[in-house]
Image 1 (tube, rainbow, N blue to C red):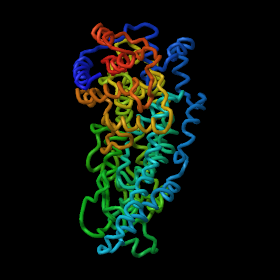
Image 2 (image 1 turned 90 degrees about the vertical axis):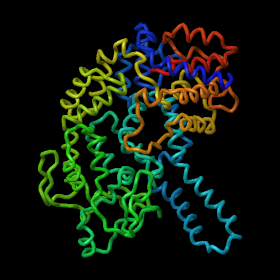
Image 3 (image 1 turned 45 degrees about the horizontal axis):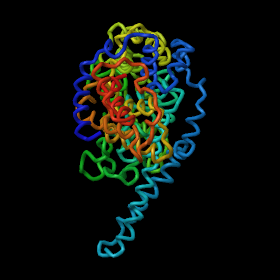
Image 4 (image 1 turned 180 degrees about the vertical axis):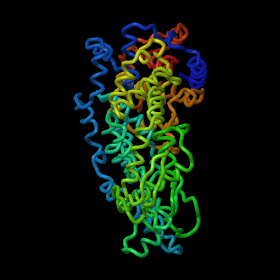
Length: 538
């Protein structure tokens, strides 16, 4: 397929995606209902998946997915076995990958400027340490692709992606690349089908989140005086973690200092308090005020990181805490409190009606349509409230709802780059042969505009069509489809030799069928199928 052809087809697909409706791409048969469920609870069907679900029924399949702990997943465990950083603590990762990089950089800074003849000998060492320091993020990204493609626990993988995106942390900010492995493993994954309150607290106490939204430095402005009068122990004063920029200063999501004054006094940082309400719980229209933001920030003073330069965990530092009386959303928090002030705020937010509605809307948007039915959102919010935020019960209500199972919901969503890449590999039965092939899939995510764990704003990546449907983006998808269909050196090379229809039961338009029929061979037919408007939807 020539590049010009790919551009033309992508332009057609971009226009067609917007015009497709559910009745065009699906007829509402039992098999199409199964494909719909496989596309929403997971990352799309593999060859044979439709038959398996047909044998046990949709209701039983949904129930199985709601209890991932009961599903054996030995194949994924085998594929992840070589990714050694996945089981390491943040402290171990920092010791092995962060500290050598810091030492190499320190050595370069100490190099006399007039000794340029030794510079070439030292640069490779720093470059090598830099490359090694990328290992934790590289392996974390590979595991995300491998789990999404091969895990039997598909709903768990979709929800792990959903909730990480909801509680987004950008790996590019300072030491967060060394903290994300533990963040996803400990704060996100164990809680995706549990009480929302547990998930909320796990993220609030995670060093990755504490650093990303600057709460680890937030303190009662008077705390400097109290600390000077107390013990000599210092918590991060005057130096940024890992010797990074902005010593003692709030930083932007890219890790750059917001101010330029040297060694400023600690003060209240409202970043986390604001995002906690706007993005994590209530929503932007959830009824809070700027006064509430300030009061919440006060409640979380002292929530910091123990030895951040060494990858330490959460620690509450009483001397940084504002123990005065606070009022959050009309709830009085008495003076004299400590860490319980922040925990009380989490209680208030987790049980607030605006949180129930905000989270229900996001879940319905992810699993049903970009504009979810109000009736469904109402029922999900009611179920959230009735079960005290039991996410498994909320998901059960959603996945068994008439709105979710209605034919008009079929193919109503446009796939994000992650969903497109993973569903293409699953549908074709492609088999990444080694780490190089898996890394190629991770690289594809960057090319498609969705680098894994590297979304800068705390809002996370959008999952609505407007973010991903344009000719340029679809050209890149078409190029990946061509690669996957059999171009040498690609992940899943040779996948098109004997592959089933990757649409796996979805009805396609006559235009799409006619276009595929003109293919000059199996690889091109596969590429055209994967690049079709119908396959861009789920």
